[in-house]
Length: 442
Image (cartoon, rainbow, N blue to C red; front, side, top):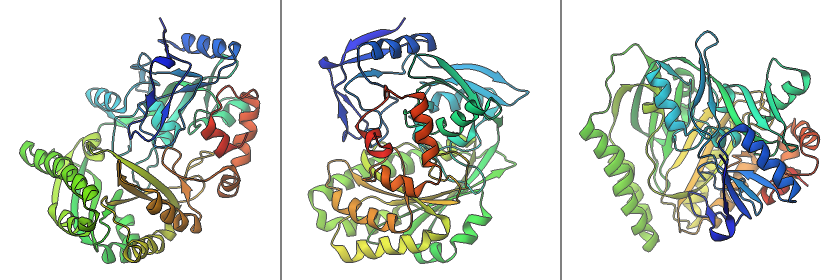
C-alpha cells in the first residue's frame, strides 16, 4: 500500500546538500499500479510529479514542489531469464543490491559506474557511466523499460516493439524523468567474470602522450589527475581467467578507507580552512597511493566507497579532443590562482544510440571536476565549463552545469526527437520542473 507524507513537514535534499525541495506531498508507492494512481491523482490536483532516487545528482533534475515519488518500496528482482540473459528489476532497487544479487546468481552487468549507491532508475535516467573501450553506460545495457506516462497508463518499450515503443525506448533509457516514471528495467547480463585491476601512478604528460595506446590496450582505462601537480593515478581493468586475488582486508582498509576516505577527508577540511596549502597537500596526496594489482568479481573492481562529500561537474568531449582539453584545464589551474583540492577524473565510453546520451553518436571522453562540499566552486566550474563547451562538450545530466535547451539543440543531433516525443507523452507537462524547463525548453 502506498504511503503519503506531507512535504511541508520536511525538506528533501540531495546527497551533496546543494539542492533542496519542499514537495506538496511525498508518496511511497509499492507497485506500478500505485505509481499510476499517484500520477493520476497528482494530475487531478494540478500538481507536477517527480520520482527521486538516492539524491546522488548534483542538479535539481528530481526536485519538485508537487508530488515526490520515493522508490523505497519499488525494489527487488522481478525475473531472471537465463535463456535471454536478462534480469528485470524494480526501479527503486539500489545498484549495490542488484550487483550482489546478480553475483549470487552467477551473473553480472558488463560495466558499471564507480559507485553503487544509486537506484537503477536514478542512475540510468541521468546517464551514469563507468569507463570502457567497448562497453558503454549502464543505460546502454537496458533491453526493456516499463514506465508510467502522464495519463497514468503503463507503457512497456524495447528495441523490438512497435514504432512508437522503439522511439520511446531510444529516448527513455536516459529520460531525465521527462517522459514518465520508470517502474522497472530489464538489463542485459552475462555470466559472472573476473576483472584484474592494475592501479599505477604515472606522470600526466606520459598519460596524455600515450592515451590512445592506453585506451586501445585496455578494456577499461581511467585516470585521476591531481591539480597543482603533474601526477596521475591510472587504473586498467581487464577480464581475467583468475584466480581470484582480492585486495587484502588490511590493505583494502588502509588504501580505500584510511587513505582515500579518512585521510582525504581531513585533507579536505584542512584545505578548506587554509586554501594556500592545497598545492602542498596535492603533491603529498598524489604520491600516497602506491601501485597495486588485484583480481575480483566486477562490482568489487569497478566500484569503490565515496564517503567524502563533494560537488561535481562532468563533461563528455569527443574522445579525440581529450588530451587538448585536459592540457587547457591544467593551464587554467596553473595560471589562475584557483586552489583545487580534488583530483580530476577521466574516463571513456564508446558511441551509443540513446537520444540524449552524452555518448550519443560519438566516441567520448569524460572529464569530471570536483570540489569539497562547502568550498566555493563557482569560479573553478565556470572556467572549466568554458573550456569544455569550446570542445563541443555535453554535460552529465546529473552534475552541475549551466547549459540550456538552445545549447543542447546544437549539441545533440537528435534533440528534436526527444522534445517531440515529450510533447506526445506529456503535453500538459505533468513531469515538468525548473531543471527540465531550462534544459528541454517549456
